[in-house]
Image (tube, rainbow, N blue to C red; front, side, top):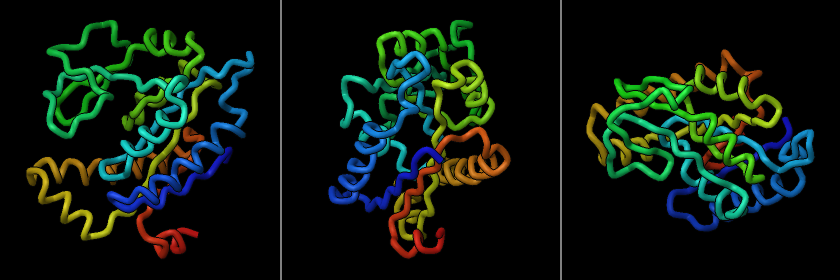
Length: 212
């Protein structure tokens, strides 16, 4: 591993967010993988994580640390917008062939345009991509190779957190999100060499002790 980041995150806790931010600041400063063979800071970082794993907090922390260097890439999707969507999706009626990497999830299409990602890199920026489809991740890694790092974000969610999430959405939506966690974990186990880093998001210290 190039780095290990421990995200001991408690919902609504500024202290736990600060602990994540401090670690990320050190990663940005000390890690050489953010500079490619040409000495450029241009880099692609893919964050792969299921629902309820804290992807939004990780993305926000990275952007807050380096707002001028980090750019969140917007994927295209045919899925209608909902009130839980953030800035990583561009909602469209259809995806054109300009989206050269496409995949399906829950009956909707998602797409990425590698030309747009290269454009971000040409500005000496870090392109941040939230992506959990394993085949799409492989295509991104194939395209950007040594200037691409893949982070697997894992979280053990306790029953209380699950119950809170369950009450905030439909039963069908909740089932889909729980299923996505299991599917991504299995994808990680069968494709471990594809990932550059693992980030453990645990809200309890004893959970962390069990992992060690």
